[in-house]
Length: 252
Image 1 (cartoon, helix red, strand yellow):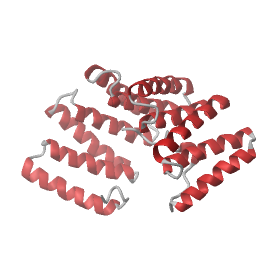
Image 2: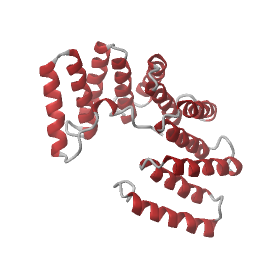
Image 3: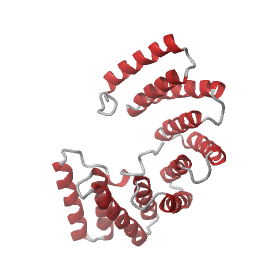
């Protein structure tokens, strides 16, 4: 609860307490204790305490490798979390290496179309996107989107996130018309699923408004951005940074 509310100090204190109690009662290598360590690493990660998060995540991975095996889902999730830590520090090569490892293993163990596999592919696309490797990012996003549309549905949250991410990649390549079509597709889905005032809908509105501004469609841009401003003020939220809204969020 504390972590979800951003009360990091309180969350950290409780997680350390749980971790120490589980170590004493269950042992150092029990899966529940490893889960506690991973949760503490997540708290550090959310605060940008990368070194501390990395140390704990590596500890978890080493123990899970020895106790659970290299292909266990818990271990793969831990590697994906470590890749996220590297990604947020701009350590692209290390992040890419780990994410590729997770993708290959999940394909073999879970299958190419499993949601966890698709999440890993989307995260790799994010790594490419952050480096300006647009063609590689687009290829992966299209792959994920086609599979999610077929297996989940157009209005599934993962699908809508992928549509937004693909729109951003297209926009960065100057393919404005295609990007606008994707943003409109995402907006339609968000409004249907969450309603016009939901944060995800409003973030999509901001992305579309910024696209209109770049195209010189000032009236349309103003309409969209004012709509987002009013909606977020009503929700007492902050105005998101428009261009980073979706793709900046890992799906780990």
